[in-house]
Length: 194
Image 1 (spheres, one colour):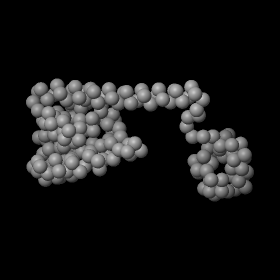
Image 2 (cartoon, helix red, strand yellow; image 1 turned 60 degrees about the vertical axis):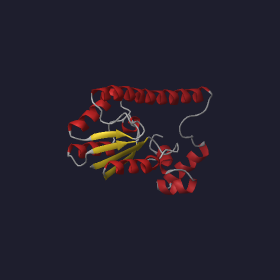
Image 3 (cartoon, one colour; image 1 turned 45 degrees about the vertical axis):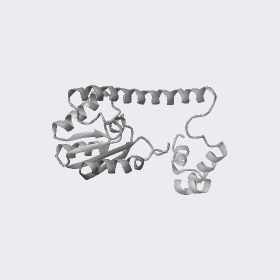
Image 4 (cartoon, one colour; image 1 turned 30 degrees about the horizontal axis):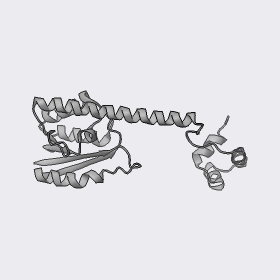
């Protein structure tokens, strides 16, 4: 049996790394056959526009593998019950089974499997909403406390120096290096009308 592996994390900046999943997923896949390919990405599971996920589905439709394994359903998709069920049904319709490493009851089950998948997919989608709400609440709290959000603004002296250098014909790259700021910051402050 040819086995595809799908591993996903949302971001590396919080200690997440697909390699954390891959060691055990490889061993799990080898118990079921030969590893066909490993699809990994760092992107929110709440988005349908995931390049490796799309490639996995395309190759499933092309019948290039027989089984896909993933760490947990929320690593496969956080789009909600209906889209997740649709993906899993499409896999089965193309002769591809699926298995969750940490959820042994997610194993290309019959109609009862759809109930379990619906429940877990709904929970995963709700978790994503909670994460978004918590982030917004944290930003609102910081804003209310007077903490400036976003990139810090530059002092008037730095802005004037950048404009003077630009008027002298210097490039944005030269100005950025000279003042120790980024080229995009230079562009922001020396653009016409800035």
